[in-house]
Length: 270
Image 1 (cartoon, rainbow, N blue to C red):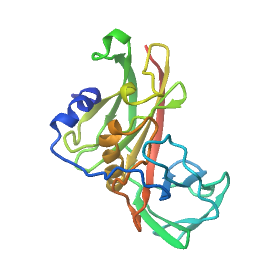
Image 2: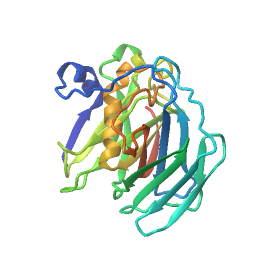
Image 3: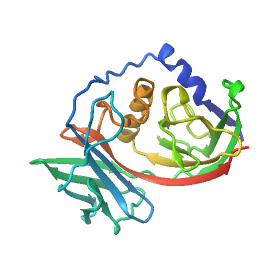
């Protein structure tokens, strides 16, 4: 089985120099905009939708919660689920378990406005395995990379987001990829912690416990994360929603609504 190597580290080093696709993020210090972070997964609840307001781009990622909103999610079959507020700004529902192939619509009413977004949960693409190896760029620090392996289905447009945890702490880096150049292939992707652009991430070393969550996401959600991935080198450590990448929420606000599958694997780095 042919392994197609995708080296994320090299991509990040050369992307700004060689990329011909320019996305205007209109970065700034506008504050007080609504931020919606909605996630529906194929695992048993609770499903979580978080509401907050943004802070200046130069600040750390502490976002004031938005309380007292009305939040619900429905599917194409007419099933409706009400989300209740627990911790301030966090709305959840424990009865909803997402089903691949279903389309879910979120409705948020707050501040006299109604916000909606729809997302179709893709089919599951299995996360095969994880390995670790030496970082060939930062050899003097003895840092490591974590490699993700999976079989991409042929003839189907697939989009993925990976979330990396090192010793149970989520890395600030964003990893979002599609199968434009590896449709139907057995894929390996190297994930690393971009310590140069973060005051939190310290890198991956032998003996660390690394966990990777693999999300199968739809195209609008991929566009959101891929745009932020391009911009992450410009943001302060930990900044998740400092600007206005393309969103699937109407009327336009910051954030996203994602119906996605999720699965995770864990290894001890060698």
